Length: 261
Image (cartoon, rainbow, N blue to C red; front, side, top):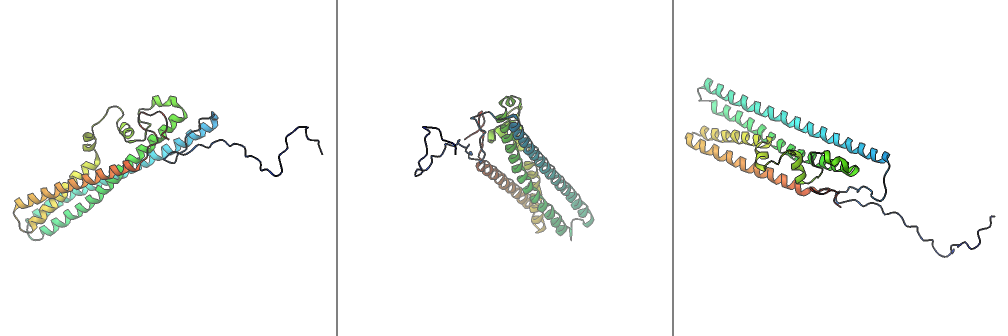
């Protein structure tokens, strides 16, 4: 056996060895993400791997957003085509039947079918609007990850790197600030809402006429049902939007240069 150095401290067999202090692990923030280590510089290989993973996720969100937008635009086109074809068909049937006899049931059936497709399209447009906000916030968060990796790239981003409500507004329009009214009136959601309000108003008016009421009552019923449709769906859309914003916990707020702990 080799002699141990004289004077070397020997651990007492009856005493447990003290544990060596361990480096503090980075804690996750409220969103479940772990902040980038700040204690020591990371190698270029680690940073490159992290940037590649962020870019892959970014492309995935872009593809999902593009697919959702393409799908909902196709459904909108189909619905508007059905509305146009339905109104033309009603006109042809009216001329053929001289607006008597079986015309009223046929008109109600056509308008009822178009109204059903309109309600389904309205719901899908509402969901895609919420999904689009989700994709924008997700890409804003990834853009913030790029800034964490290399703060110098932040000056080249026109879209926001903050994944809060204000950051989403900047990404939707980063050249100038748009009013909420212009953004709302220019949306596909409001377009389909107006078309559906007209369809349901026509359906209500047609039903009143089929009962033998005067045209004035039919116009009043149609206007009332169309206005009610607008109010109800505007309220539904606003409620869904506010619920989505409240359910989201931003990692980086607008005006901030670091991730939110």
